[in-house]
Image (cartoon, rainbow, N blue to C red; front, side, top):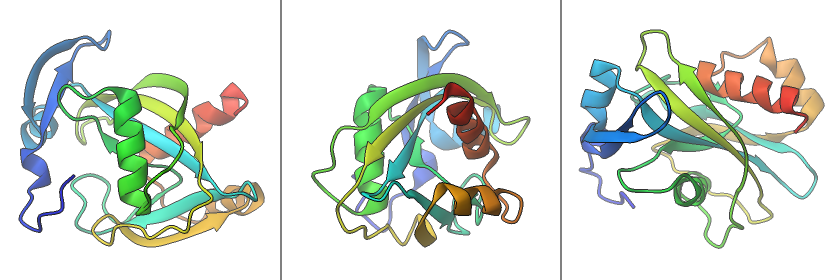
Amino acid sequence: MHASAAFDPSAEILDVVDEQDRVIGQAPRGEVYARGLIHRCVFIRVRDSLGRTFVHRRTPTKLVFPSLYDMFVGGVVGAGESYDDAALREAEEELGVSGLPRPEPVLKFLYDSEGVAGKWWSAVYEVRCDLPVNPQVEEVAWHGFLTDEELTARLGEWEWVPDGRRAYERLLAHGA
């Protein structure tokens, strides 16, 4: 979607929503973050054929939570875009694949970043990826597939994005 090297992520137009996830306007991502406006994001847990979870470290150039680890791929939902379409687009973009099955929705919650970038509705999905991944170098500094045991062990060792960590805790509580 954003193949141009000159693309400015802060200029991307997002839907601004209310506490009930109803669209109330639109604004550039940079303004949404700066003003703490509520917006929409998707989180996709990717598992391979062995059931391992795709984990990565974000690049230092990311607008929010640079250089932290995440057990989800995902991102913001663009203006006028559905959660389902955003989940597929973000998963394919970040993994560097095409032809991925449509991610399955699992749960949704309102996340409060406590002053970092406002609040966002977080739609959590799962998808199986049997394709060889080639993650975007602009987004992913390191990646690997970890077993549940390896992931659990790293929770206390690595610095994780707080919204992804919260989504992961909710997935576990949900029994997923």
